[in-house]
Image (tube, rainbow, N blue to C red; front, side, top):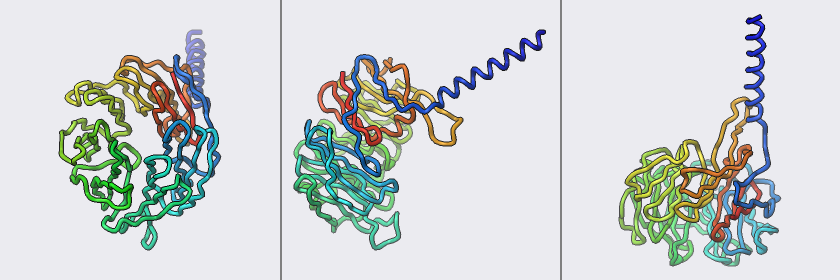
Length: 354
């Protein structure tokens, strides 16, 4: 009798575990918001490919850089109604696009990896960008004669100067343009600069540059290219760096770390992978948090959710249900105003607001 009871109990235990695992492995498309926030879809971009980056110039005008599945075809779409509808600008550029930035409604730059004339995909014998001055209607291909390599993550400072990281033969140099990409000059060189192509490289904040290093730290320089300090982190490559102010910084590596003293000390505020949507203040912010992994399927499948914090990440408010592969489909976010962000999930543009 006792053996029969134990056998029945073991069958129940195994079936319960299997049911729990299967629940975790159920593919869930619905994206839920944490309590106190509203999440809604603005539009689905109908394109045979995927979003690499997006940028809104104001509440109405925005751009999306698209690419085909193997990354060797670039296209730009534009909206003039806040993302409700998108117009194909017919760029149809057949080289590897890297990054896009717009200065205003008219001037924009796309950095590319032009592999013409050499065996792809690793040749870096020339440096090429695409530039528009009419809001994407026409594009000029510009070869930068004094540079060799690929330009990554172009960004403008508050004075309208354009910066990028130049990658050549495994080394990185920060370069600067004062004429929207027509000409470039070296701005900062260091053997310590380095980043993964899919992750954070540098950010301009309060007229300072926070740059990723090979040692997985943050190098800080000013607008004159002068060294300020090194913020020691010493973890894996940064996925995200959120600089709330010079003392309060959040970094996402294999977990989420926070400093309140400019990097002198760090503490873990979430011990799994995550992505930053944005922070309004030291206390209030939104992140995508990984909750569990499914090991039963042959394809990548994890469960993530959008969570909010009101105490700087020490506690998180989460929706009841997670979404499958939400983090891997996350293409970035942009703060539109206080308590309002646009986020791109796959090819779907959404807004989340408090």
